[in-house]
Length: 285
Image (cartoon, rainbow, N blue to C red; front, top):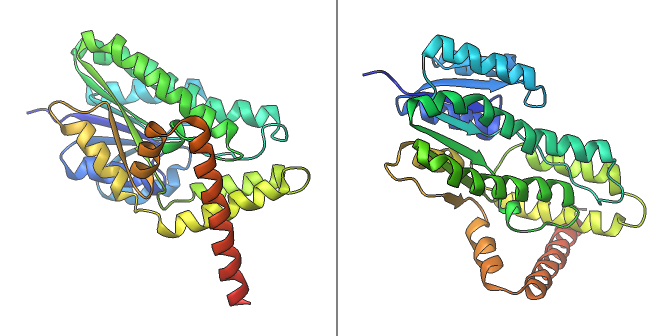
């Protein structure tokens, strides 16, 4: 029986690498895509095919998908994992940085989908699995650009689910909470660079303290990989899977609380996190 073929973007580290390993372990012919191909040598050793893709370079997407289809003859699963976080006050983040955030997290994802859809439609089957975030439902302080990109992923995935159902193609969203990776460090570095001084400096410190505390309890990338497994292999996959540190609690609170009550809750959590971090730092001095 011909093995099913899966593509995983952003597979050079952390979550993407773990997803690729799990899909391979579960019997799929896996293609791992990323900019840093040399960082995927360990995946090569497992029999996973590695290829260069920069999701902000649409030509590289077309080239990679074309090569995969020529080699494998089919594409059954696309896991859109590539993305990054850029935090900072909307006023202070350069508009080009905001555009790039959307180009990677939204337009690159949708271009990957465009590239595989003709193949999946002819097969009359396929699974598209889009990595969103709890920030696709819950706004984070100083996260306007990142949150906006994930809200866009949520809405576009919902629309895609409707338009692709007649072709036998499932669309599933993965909504992780705090997951151990280099994401938090990159997001906070971006925030400090843009908003560490000036009118938003107090908010930037508060946000950094919140993430510092939250990511002390972060879940392992395996949590996300297992959700992707469910979306890829279940006979009737859910439209959404959420998991990881804090995810279910935040999403439930967002669903139940009115906007202002939720805002007050989030503000209280931020203040509490700042007190805990300050207390810990003073003890360690």
